Length: 249
Image 1 (cartoon, rainbow, N blue to C red):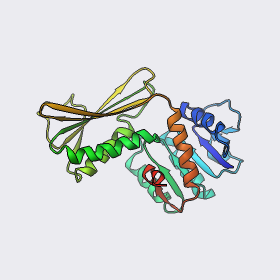
Image 2: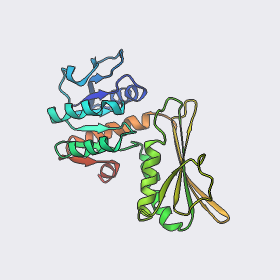
Image 3: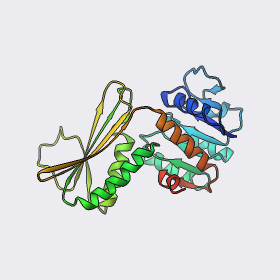
């Protein structure tokens, strides 16, 4: 039985991970961490230092401000981590890479299988549609705090990699009155209602437009992906892993 410590237990994704774990015979949430009071069927602590239970892996759907304590707990207990939180600073990303020298860490901006297929398709389309303008549009619910989404940036990085890193990112265009440059990847964010997550990669050429799209209709797809990542990471050596590693199995 895989014993899970759930960071961000009281959030929407935390609740979805717990619900998904209930439907998996080999996964059990033994405890949670959340700064806010969180009624749950398992113990929930305000901070990692208070956790009494022993866990095989931590799944984190919380806030960037929790990273320092999360890594400290995982390093102290030699516990693998699945990090699903987005919006980290460059320093925090460096901290994750440093911790991954000692423990296995699984980090990705999106745990949906479909989104990762979208990334692969976007890479291939970039190579095939040379000279097309590329724009990325992401839509999320009004409670999402980071913009652009981690997934939009993941898609942009995939496109840029396929273009030999010759492109640069242009976020919206409200403060720039100039003709679009051929080396741009335009990235646009929309926030409203209860949109779970929608991402479009638009390739605009002369007289034709191709759009690759992914629409997440339920947060459960991310929860199941995170649990699959947890199953994978507990058997790994120290290092930084992502969905590419999982999908190669």
